[in-house]
Amino acid sequence: MLKKSVLSHNKVTQQQQTSPILILEATDFSQNLFGHSEARAIKAILNNLFLIKTSDVIEMKDGFALFQVGQNLKGYSAIYLSAHSNKKGFQVASGFVTTWKVCGEWLQNYPYIQILFLSGCEAGSYDTVKSIAQHCNTVKYVFGPTDKITFAQAAMAAHVLFFQLLVKKNSPELAAFHASIAADIQYSYWNCDNLRV
Image (cartoon, rainbow, N blue to C red; front, top):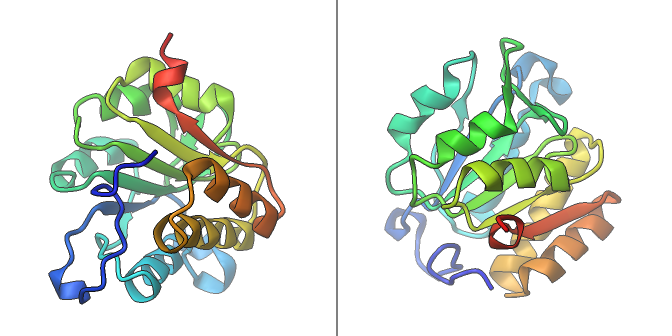
């Protein structure tokens, strides 16, 4: 079960909230649907609908993006990453590909990051999550699609997932199930401790 302190739905104003979720956008904004950003849509959903204050959307433009982002991680317990991806890695806006192994090694430096919300093709697959978990023993939970997805499916899955976790207070497994049904994709939840054996 997810800790209530990690993602909680409080009835307070946004100004009173902490910022538990860092939102990273690794895609080129000009390639998105009518110039819209999935990450910006998720930020609006979390901020306005669920009253969860997030970071501003941080654009990851080049191969050094992960290391530059590291300076901004203090105070966050979760990352939402929107990126073009497959089972091998994810691509930043410049076209540079970062492997999931490198992502796991990078996350090992930030033990306070406990949850990853991965929004990209095959980002929630067994191979992806196992690669992260084998190189990072601090991330506890990973959510993400195992299929190829569209912008609309990613936004729908995230909206339903957060609704199920924050409002309905459902288990992560049930929340991922509802996200799968709503977005018509296979959406997974992983407890990384089970993949580190």
